[in-house]
View: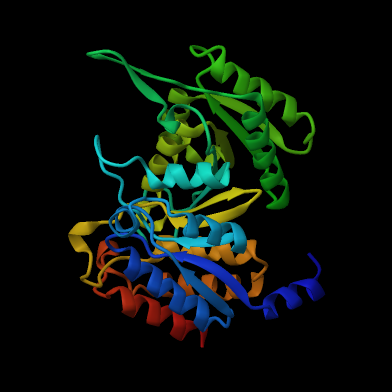
Length: 344
């Protein structure tokens, strides 16, 4: 993108769908909106509710108006939404990804200054296929006491996500892409994924490629994560490994995420709704703020994203305005105010 075009985009007014979410969601999204607007980004926010709130108000967890808003605006910022465990409605996150065909889940894992963690230099990216596999939740009762869960893997989806991973690596100056699989046991399903990886990799000879069996990859991530750069995998593996990697840098409160497809993109905090601290104003908004930075770069607001990121890193480095989960004493609003003050 040339500088003249970037300037035109930066001056444009953006309409973005905002889903505050459940629990601490409204508090952390509000802080993020404050910071984005303080950076000079002109945004008209269209607010919608999903999940339990929508179920109570509209009788459905994924209202058509919310889906249409994201399709129309092609971008959304979303707070965490509660998913009942073992009962109740199915995952809204999964439903949203399927409704919009948000096939690429992108989870950067990068250590922040002044945050105690095992690997302070870590910088890798998880690229997860988002639409099929065991995580889709295709289950049925065969007979009482016997449940079958279906793992569907297709050449189309596998090729698409692998290509996305290599394109991401090329566009971001990354050196290597690792396919994560269990093709030694699931020879047909994961075998198909690995075949697609090998085929696509031939189109990117400048990028190193390798594959790792999932269990070995988990061990390697804990022992020597610096060997990895971009990792691509099917849905369930990505759900597990992205949380594992977040633990290496201090937890899910520091892990941003994006769900990207042809019809739009949804940027979200990947942690839960933390109902036990909701309404207290003490939640850490870092994860959704960093997701917001990914969103700004996605819509061309490069300068604003860099301005906010520089200020956020300065606040972390100074260490005086961190939230309680990071060992500080500041609340959500104070943390946001400190970043805004750093932006001048």
